[in-house]
Length: 111
Length: 113
Image 1 (tube, one colour):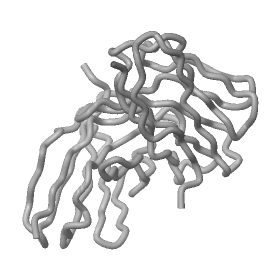
Image 2: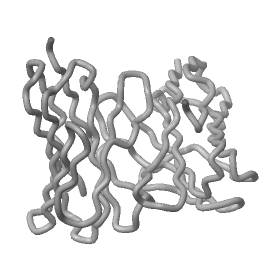
Image 3: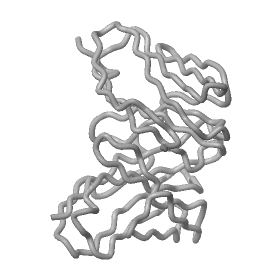
């Protein structure tokens, strides 16, 4: 069983829709949770970071962590075509060290 | 603007050749990583380093080797390339402060024919 499970999609939604991306994990030691965005032919870039449980909001993006369910989510409001990318969740027990990544969800926002 | 640089961006090479993928960062980060990423698949850690003269193998078995002689430089070498090595290789670094996560390079897409 993989430590981190993420639905690879692809996911296609119309512009302006609310997007929900999710990951589940099995290692209860994970405390640091991140979301990365990866455009085609580029390396991933950090989008959101959360420590332990709770919510974090940054503009149109909201990250949620539910440690009791071992489940994390990324919500994108008012989605734009420029949000089209692959989104990877990542997590670690020790901060930004030896992150374990999900498979990535390929998202397309249609104008 | 990228602070971590990978060269070459694309490489097509014949079986049996020795290749070195370059990775350099200008942020003074102690920790550096090499990941392998196949299309639609998760990133797999193949090597990491927590400082000069410190290197470790990652979770994915790899026939490559790395060196860390200078803080800013973390090259990856394949002594004898095989078609099974065809993949995208991503280099990353991280400093203090978990909230900054990793900074990734743009990757090297390697094709072995």
